[in-house]
Amino acid sequence: MKDLVIINGQINTMDPRMPQAEALVVKGGKILLLGTNEEVRRAMPLGAEIIDCKGNSVFPGFFDTHVHLTFTGLNITTLKLEKASDKKELLDLLLAREAGLAPGLWLHATGYDETKYPDRSLPTMKELDELFGSRPVLLERVDAHQICVNSAAFVALGLSIGEQGVELDEKGDPIGIVKDPANGRAHKKFSEDLITDEMRREFLKNACHESLKMGTTSLSALEGGALFCDDDVDVFLDMQDKLPLNTVLYHQTLDVNKVIAEGQKQIGGCIVLDGSLGSHTAALFDDYSDLKGCKGNLYYSQDIIDDFVLEAHEKGLQVSMHNIGDRATERLLTAFERACSKYPRPNHRHRFEHFSMATDDQAKRAAALGCCLAMQPSYVVGDEMIRTRVGEERMKRSLRFKTFMNMGLKVGGGSDAPVTPVSPFHGIACCMEHFLKEERMGFRDAVRMFTTDAAYLTFEENRKGRIAPGMDADIAITDRNVLEINAPSEYRDIKFDKTIVGGEIRYAR
Ligand SMILES: [Zn+2]
Ligand SMILES: [Zn+2]
Image (cartoon, rainbow, N blue to C red; front, side):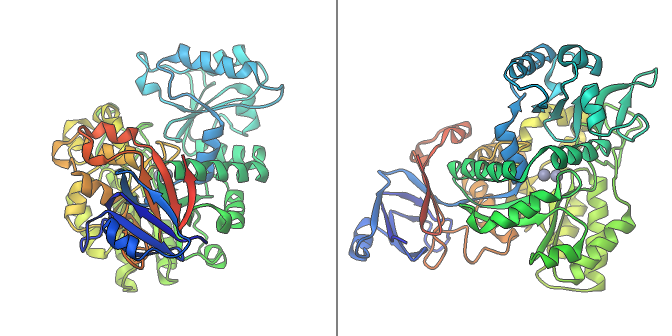
C-alpha cells in the first residue's frame, strides 16, 4: 500500500480539536498527521503519492447508515419510473423497455409514485394484460411497499384473491395493486425465483461503485429477510471482504442464532413493524387525515417483538427494526424498555430505523435507554405526500432530525437506497432545506449526521467519521470548495474527484 500526501485542501476534519487543515499524510492506511502544506511537506514519507486538491474541499469518508445494497444494485440495473409524471408516461416507458426484451423475460420496473400523477391512477391489471399479454409485468412503488402487476405476474408470484393486501374491485377480481403483506411475500418470491447469485454479485458491485462515486466509504447494508431474500445475505457474506468499501451487515431476520452463527454483532434493519405513509400502511396512533378509519398496519404482535428483542439483547446483539408511524415506534420502544429493564446492558446502541413520526415522549425514552436513530433526510422531499397523509399538525413532528440531535440522541444519516439516491450530499442538502423551518440544520451539523454521528451507530466512532491522527484514512475529496456554495441545493451538484478507503484510492473521477 502506497502512502499518500494530500495538499492544498480545504479539509473539514469534523474533529473539534482541529476543525480545519490544509494538508495531511496517510501512512499504512491511517491518518498520520495533518496541518499546513509546509508542516506536511516536512513529514512527507519517501515514495508517497501526492494528491493536490487545488483548494477543493475534503471530508471524512461519508456514511450511509441505511442501504439495501443488493436491492440498490438491482435498481441501478432495472427500468426506473421516477420520471413518469402520469399514467401515460409510465406506460410509454414500459412499452419502450418491452421493445428490447427477449420473450419470456419479466418486464420489471421500480420507482413509480402515483401520488404525483394528476389523477393518481395506475394501469389496471386489464390494461397491462392488453398491452403485454403473457409477459409478466411487475412494477414496484417508490417506497417498495406496493406493487402493480398483470395477470401473468400475479400467477407467477403465487398471489391469490383472498390474500391480505391484494386489492379487489367490486366484483371481487384483482385490480393489479398489491400491498403488504402480500407485497412482501411477492417481492420475496420474485427475488428468490428470478434472481441468480451471479446477478447478485453484479448488483453488489454496481451499488458499491455508485456509493463510492458519491463519497461514501462506510455503509450499513440491510439485507435478506421477509421483503427481500436470504440468498442476498449468503452472497453478501461471501463477498463482504472483497467489497471496495466498509460495510456492516444488518441481516433482516428474527433468527438470532443464525445471525450469531454468521459471526455478526448486530441484527435487524427493515424488519417492517409497519409499512409506509405513502401506501397508508405506516401504523399511526390516530387516523390518516386522508383516509378516515385507517390507522395503518402493524405486522408483528407485541409478544413477537418482545421475544425477539429480548433474545437478541440478552445474547449481546445490537437490535434494529423498521418503524415509521408513531404506533409502530411505540411497540419497538416498549420492547427495548422491557429487554433493558430485565437485562440491563450498557452500550447496546439499539437502533430505530426511520423513527419518522416519533413524539417527544418517545424520543426522550429512546434517549434514556441509550438507543440511536438511523434516519433518512431525503424523505423530506415527500413533504406534499406527508402533509396529505397526516395533516399540518402531525407534520410538525415528522422527520425531526435536528430536534432529536439536540436532545442528545445520536442520529445517523442514511439514504434508504434504493428508495432515495445513495448520495450523502443529497441528504445533507435535504437537512438544510427541511420543510419545517425549525428543523433546518446548519451545514456542519448536517455533515455530522453523515460522518461522526453515523459512525457511532456501528460502534466505529473511534476509528472513522473524523480526519485525525490514528483514524482510518477514509477520505472524500470533492470537485469544489464548499465555502463558495451559496444555496443548499447546490450541494447536490458536488462531485467527487477521489474517494479513499483505508488509504487506498477506490474511486477517481
Ligand atoms: Zn424500512
Ligand atoms: Zn429500508
